[in-house]
Amino acid sequence: MIDPDWIWGLAGGLMIGGAAALFLLVNGRIMGASGIIGGLVDRSGWNTALERGAFLAGLLLVPGLFVLATGVPAQTNLTGNLWAVIAAGLLVGLGTRLANGCTSGHGVCGISRFSLRGMVATVFYLLAGGIAVVLFRHWLEVV
Amino acid sequence: MRALFAFLAGGLFGAGLYVSGMTDTTKVQGWLDVFGAWDPTLAFVLGGAILPMALAWNVTTRRARSTLGTEFPSRPAPRIGHNLVVGSVLFGAGWGLVGLCPGPAVASLFWGGTGGLVFVAAMLAGMLAAPPVRERIDRLATL
Image (cartoon, rainbow over all chains, first blue to last red; front, side):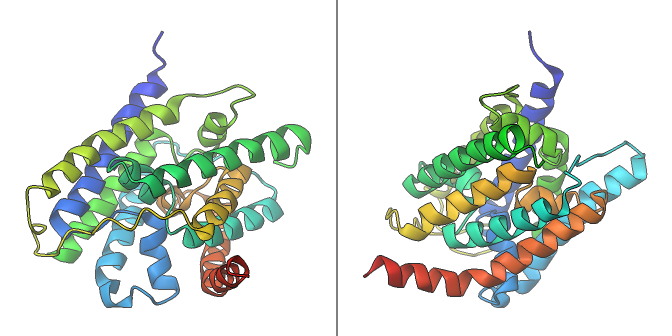
């Protein structure tokens, strides 16, 4: 029995991979969200600021305008616990920059070139993510 | 040209994140919830994304430069450093806690409400804090 969500997941995944392939083959860059943002935040990537800014503008505007224009209901279903949101944001920002990559950079771009670092990073963030869900959702019930 | 294609790549990435369900934190937490009501959708997303990107990496072996003239990114040394592991664990913990990683956090800003904005602000702060933390980890690691 195939869940329609899986088909949407596969279709969206192909789009994500297509975007990464486009950015690599045309611009010659790795499509890693945390690296593209982080290089602007800590100024290490200011020499390519326009390219980074344009990528982020597309990332922000295209899904945003699509949802606004079509009126399709979109929900992030984010927890209402703002302390958890702040803590998670800090962890995600700090962690992805220490590790030099997140789900898109290590996961999509790294695994697809059989990068050992990408695979190791993915194993560790998946493990930590699984443990966090058990701990915070099932045991402590804070989110 | 560089900015135009960066915008297109970012837009396609964002649209793919939305279509695949990655901007819905309940789907992401469902995927990480291996011991609860596990939702396998993200396996389809990751699989779908890796496929075109693996083909793209293959193309780079037969070409010297990207279409816009940049050299393709070289393969980083396959060294598993402390920062890669520590960073990935911290990132995974934050990802599991609320279900957002950097790409979807930006892509969903338009409809993510206050929580989405707070998350991105905290993520940027975490990224800003990364360089000094990385130095400290490097120093501890050489003790």
